[in-house]
Image 1 (cartoon, rainbow, N blue to C red):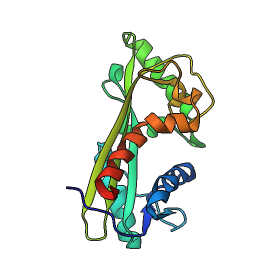
Image 2 (image 1 turned 60 degrees about the vertical axis):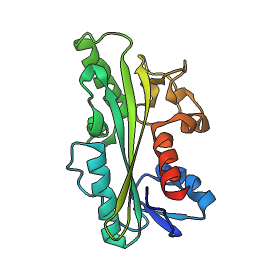
Image 3 (image 1 turned 45 degrees about the horizontal axis):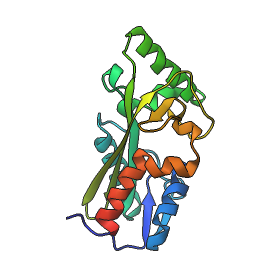
Length: 203
């Protein structure tokens, strides 16, 4: 049995305003107010693990330690079968440049590596999201979500972020970047993990 969440405030261990807004909407029905890491002036801890759950745990527990509030963190990325699961936990790293993150560069690199390997079509991949909810007493709960799909090239769509323009979820003929915000949130890896979190700790 998952531990039930009984507090009225939760720290979302992210500096991403979009992610914070998305999570605020999800918690609204439970009368839980959310506060972000930037608002609490938290530094981003170094992510030294090689798994989504490992890095999510680092972020959640660092935020709890710094604020004394229960904290929720998310570590997510895309795993490409033709690249042996890469970029995986290094998804954001593949987009790093001296001037911020460039996901068009990261997607182009991914496509070029698949071409070099002559990876067979369809080029299957999945988005993974791992949520860790941690309490001040050190307890945590882990919820993992994913969405399967294939990679398309050239990129398509203007919505979304990250690898969305080259990811076409199974059962759909459009990419995440061609979907409305609401349609993507219905089926995304984060939505999958959230449903499990809500059922486990808020249900």
